[in-house]
Image (cartoon, rainbow, N blue to C red):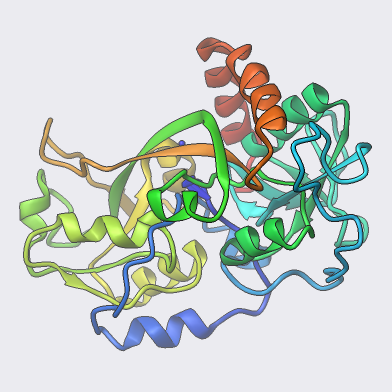
Length: 318
């Protein structure tokens, strides 16, 4: 699975700053390693990515996560799970309550659904707590965790070396990969290798592996990343880039929602080498909590995980 994740995603409903960044066609000046992000084009209508927290977000941190190794998080009753709620099929926002959803604490009348949400329930049960989602930008999740605004991160986030300096991570609950999307009729539509994209203008998402993985392409024109997957899709549609990176585990969802796009079919060994795990993030010093989480994750076999993911893909907004 990215963050993604990493499994990463999030977002305010009017974020357009990424579009201006993409038009610059300049190489980004930093390499922040982050997680995976996958979302459908329908997300352009109501989902946002990598922006500030949603309206109604609270800055209070009075019930901050316990930093001692007590085995208890927050108030021990409500598990505040940080996520974008805009990163289908990992997490997204809906107005419909169902057996698959949990409430979004900081958005009135809203619920979160998705693959991450199902594991939020697994983790909540293991800790004896009721999970609720806290919607915020992906890039703000780690700070929010360390400030006590949330208790755990379950947002398609990958455990990278950089992130491990700030927080601890569980074992992966999903592992995914990366690919490239181009428009139908593109001169790259029949590409079979990363080498075929030499000189191409490729766009990723800021602060995620969707951006840094682009450097695997030889002689690529690495564009300044944008804030969200919806902005990636918008820039591709406008023709300001030749290709965008995406998470291959959601290929069917992307193509179903974007029938004018083509997912590049790389020959074996000629695509991206980077893989992206999705891990639960916890504040440092929570070894007892982490042990409980890892035990709960290990109890979910691969067949069950696959069924959960496929079901999330079927439910995701189209």
